[in-house]
Image 1 (cartoon, rainbow over the protein chains, first blue to last red):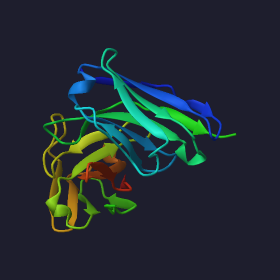
Image 2 (cartoon, helix red, strand yellow):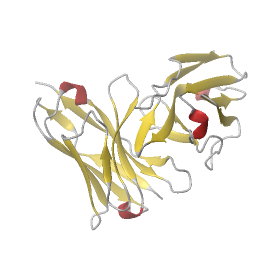
Image 3 (cartoon, rainbow over the protein chains, first blue to last red):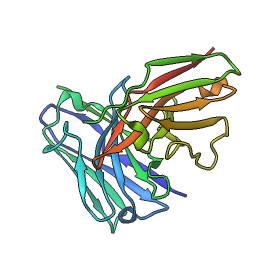
Image 4 (cartoon, rainbow over the protein chains, first blue to last red):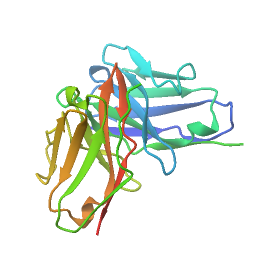
Amino acid sequence: EVQLVESGGGLVQPGGSLRLSCAASGFTVNNNYISWVRQAPGKGLEWVSIIYSGGSTNYADSVKGRFTISRDNSKNTLYLQMNSLRAEDTAVYFCAMGGTVTGAFDYWGQGTLVTVSS
Amino acid sequence: SYELTLPLSVSVALGQTARITCGGNNIGSKNVHWYQQKPGQAPVLLIYRNSNRPSGIPERFSGSNSGNTATLTISRAQAGDEADYYCQVWDSSTVVFGGGTKLTVL
């Protein structure tokens, strides 16, 4: 059974840093594309970043240069390093695994809340 | 950047058919995916590649895509269908979501 479990969220001051983790089971992270998607309180889904099976990455303009996506194949875990955090980064952050058959995001974690506030 | 336009809200009477439209420039040339999200929960893939249902998704949910509009159709709407619905496409190796539609079942 595929499972994605996010962790690492919390309260951080503006300008601070945080690293989110997404522990995967039931599949191997380096065989699939996986994204981070966030949702600000009361708002819609916003794509943040993606890492492909080959290791290439991409970012939304809103986080480019501040966030870094990576993975540890030995731990089967995805990460999102978030630096220079702003109030507008406050959101629930989901990791979502892509499906080669569907071309969509087949599986989602339950999310972890990041609050950027002084 | 590519934009997807969804209505903020759609209402449907219990047992009737709801249609949620996702607008985008020549969206018919792209594959559109649809997700359902209930309060406090993660999104769930509802329709992939315009009109395909993952296993476990009821036949009441269907999709189409042509021209500048993709449509999610929910037949025989149930109270449990009340949720937010999102369309999603790929554009130049980035992921684009529509703003979301809140479906109310009356």
